[in-house]
Length: 246
Image (tube, rainbow, N blue to C red; front, side, top):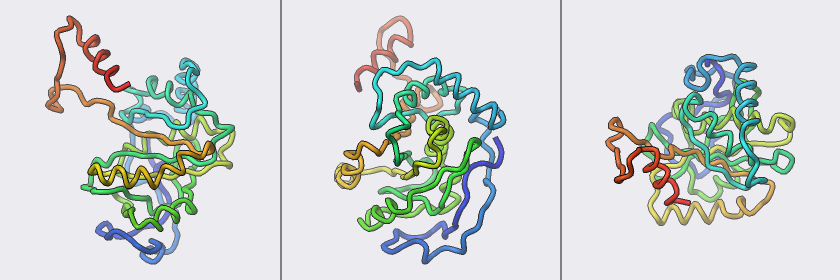
């Protein structure tokens, strides 16, 4: 899929953690095209085709635990996990949601904490998603968040893969919600507790939805992880392993 990811500001890639507004470090606002294509999202489909595909997956998913306050969804290409992700997004009630926090793990930069986007909007094949600058200001005030540069933001698929599904489930209320993307680094137990305490009040608000982007499990020789027990079929081992975290 070509040219749909981000529009907004730019800051230096090597910008240190900020203790004041990143606006002081940015150029004037300008709209920009996506830096790279994401063909793994939908096999090169148009926005209309992608929308139809998301509708189909959502229609096949059961509403069993909604309205959800938080969901965990995979961030592989949609040809691999689109149908699976639908079961998570099917639990979302768009009538209730006003703000969507998107937490995605960092794949391309070393990060000891969490980082915010320097941009104003994220472009999707359906429509643009607006970043909540008021919430960002509150998070920045904690002095615990760094700022992503544009290249890092555009390269990070863990957040990007959540966007079309968010746009789809919120389609009828697209002017009534904002997003709060947060890039999550490798956190110590102490930092996990710190960020947990910062985000807990937002999680307690029923108008906020948390979308947690996950690899689930990178299984295979490519990832040097091929655990299995003595069950005769690998899918039985994976099913057993999955249920150990529920």
